[in-house]
Length: 453
Image (cartoon, rainbow, N blue to C red):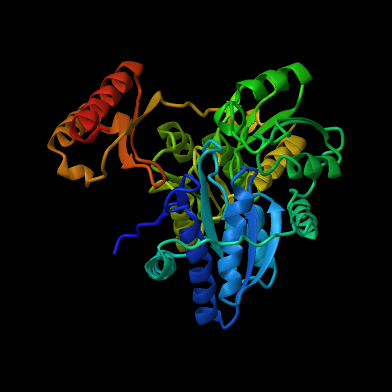
């Protein structure tokens, strides 16, 4: 049975409107607490959030429902998504809840769940929790038409920040020395606004940080991993050895070299794979990425005897493949990287720490990404009114067949729906810009004609 509330990255929406209205949020806390007590006999839950103005209200409603179910709630306050995953894994919490909409604007928000293993809940668990949410919500509304909740007042436990930072400091690559290393950070006015600068300064780096003044509404606003222009200028102006841009909840990181060159997740995967192989630590000589990673990454890895396993888009699918195949490194072009021997969660601060370690050891990232040639690629987002199976749309299928036939082995086409927004995504990659433009536009037109909003 398809899930109605949980997408690829939790429950997403606009606060105040379903599914992030007060009755549903209270029911979600109640449902989660009851599920955990049924499964584990007890329920200790850690809640964290990013800097959106809607976060405290959502946290308090979830906490109210959890408490009603007999759960014990700890509150980390503003902390990164992978920070919650780490703390749940290291402590006696049965679950973690993160209130964030990642790289989306402040008007959006979401609820992500992590198990005690520090991984997202499996589909089967989300389905059970979802059924309970609908049942509780229907019961409340049928009794009173609308239920007014008095949200709990939550006090952050800042010792959790210190524990997370200590975990990160323990993951520096042996031999790396950050003393005097000049690093520029763009913290996206998000969850890493304090933790990012504190982490690198505590390791001896000289830190120049921007976008560290969240006001509840400026998270991701013309900054962070989706807007690298400001960081590129800062790196060059400050003569930094490395620039790092996080997204709103800091589960991803993108980088800028001293020359201002953008280093995306594909380049990070290549650099880390080369380093691990040189140390005899690249299990199976395999890297895991998604269908969105550039064909150029696949080809440069293949020349060095490293295979690239592709999955559907989403870190949960990358992790599933890594666990199944025994791979130690995987991730997404967007900068969501999983170092499985350190954590099962993609962690922007951990990724930044590893990349900064490589810069310390090698003087620059450039030698580790030499030979990576990005094939021209276009991604077009098409707003849609519905999400029928793509293979049920004749006009889209005709455009897709034409593109695949023309490109052959010298290009790729990926069509998929967004798991968090009402969008269809078109990705076309080819050796020549003209082919990329032609086929991405023809597929986008077919989608608009068939199901465009």
